[in-house]
Image (cartoon, rainbow, N blue to C red; front, side, top):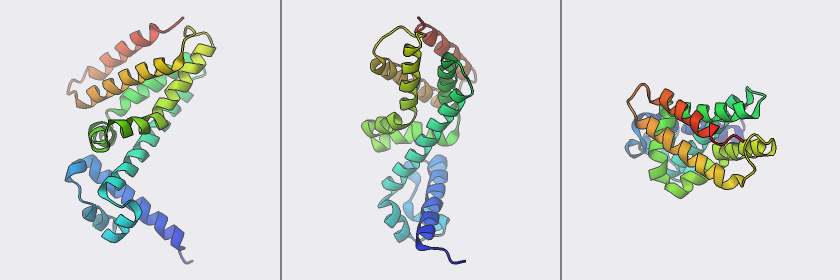
Length: 194
């Protein structure tokens, strides 16, 4: 059976994304060359430029992929619970846990904010995990579990705290940091309850 051009293009793109992700996670953005990614993926440098235009374009696509997967992890963790309060706690804990994933840590938390810039990084975060947080908070307000208040500023405040915590966890060498952060998170969240 012959492979169509569309299937071949999709396979090339997947191979470049997979190799780019592996290299960005292992070596960091600045130590990766697009030509090396292409060679390791078994495609030409021209094919890499065709799909992503530049190393920055490939990195942006990898960041979007990692962001999307992180959003799915958060939603999956929250979805294990019926109770909206436990959904929020589980989603927040899953977000914190992501900081221990080497690919998430290097690509999303260390390199993305500086390589893409804060505004673009925040916009990508907004499209993935921050959206889930806003939805969870809205459901809690509507259920009367959290006092009636504007959800947008609350989501921004909590998202900022979570992003700062996960960035700190990604750089912390303290084996107790995550459990201590989870305790602090529970105290913070409990302060929101009606």
